[in-house]
Length: 239
Image (cartoon, rainbow, N blue to C red; front, side, top):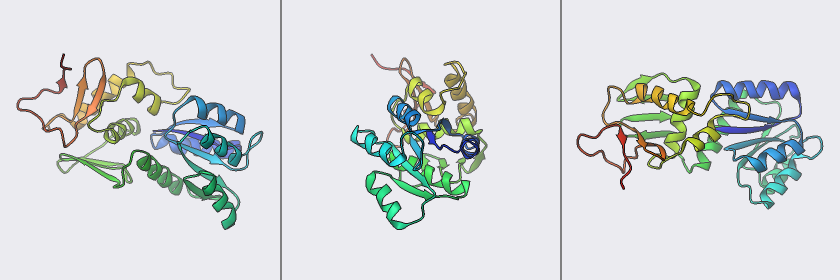
């Protein structure tokens, strides 16, 4: 998932970015309100982590502008202010969650994961597809009871497919949500990671869950899409 981190304290921004990236998030960072505004308007983020006190344009003003412009991305506000009134103002302005400094990284990660699930209308942190279990809170994956180790990037790709299960996601969609603005990988890296996932998720199991829609993209099979007899992994588009 792709996150915009808006924090003007450089040391804190670097630490949070590192922590998020280690968990598999693609992170774009902004150090002031003007930079944050430009990025939020040009890129579709899964979550924006927004500090209240920012140079040039403060966080509350930014949030009002975004909501007024129809930008519905979930926003987690960060602030050093601890009064109930400040939190109420932030939430009434359009924030989806509120976290007071100082905080533990684990809590920030948990709140971001919850907002990501909410944005995809997923209430249960455990997604089940046939015999595949994806625990989005613990970031644990099993199939047929067997634990499957995934790298952070592999997990992020599987989670993205799971949030859109039963629907085709294009390579462009995957790229825009899993890679940050400075990523220098070439476009075929998506196909490479799909192959990695298939070797871990589908190899030795039935039915195949990761499907190719030729000319369109990839899809994680939905439980409402039962496999026909003698199905192959790649399903060609009809017509």
